Image (cartoon, rainbow, N blue to C red; front, side):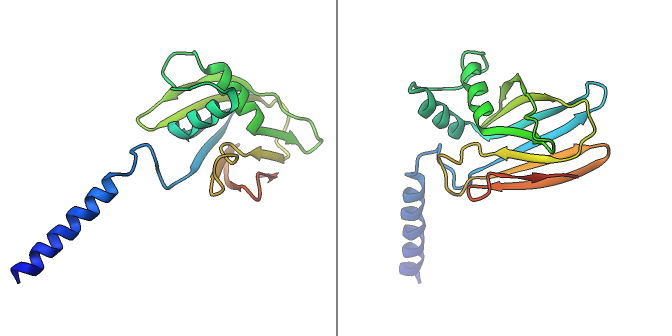
Length: 169
């Protein structure tokens, strides 16, 4: 009985050491969440994109060829803006690409929020959206987009095999 208890304790200790040997910055989950909320007063969509900070840093480093360690200052804002512009876009049903304005970013414990705004004065008729952030890094990347407009809400899921898709409410 004591031999079995010792064996179990040793088994858990070895497993704990092996699991503990993994680098802390790795995670098994590759996802982003984008919130798009229409502000009728501003006639614009206020957009926030939540990404894992380490993944965004890796993407920005790959794009820029420099080491990137995000902080609260604005040093890397031009890189973040360029990256978001390349990987997030909306085209109206009449094939007009909507401009986006980069607002800034904010860091949490393990996440980075990127804030953009998309002017939208006309009626929302739907269109095509591209949301392929981090898909160049991870085959299993999933990007969820929640759109809220005039009391309606709908969620769209973007994957590597479907980075561009029609959206409507």
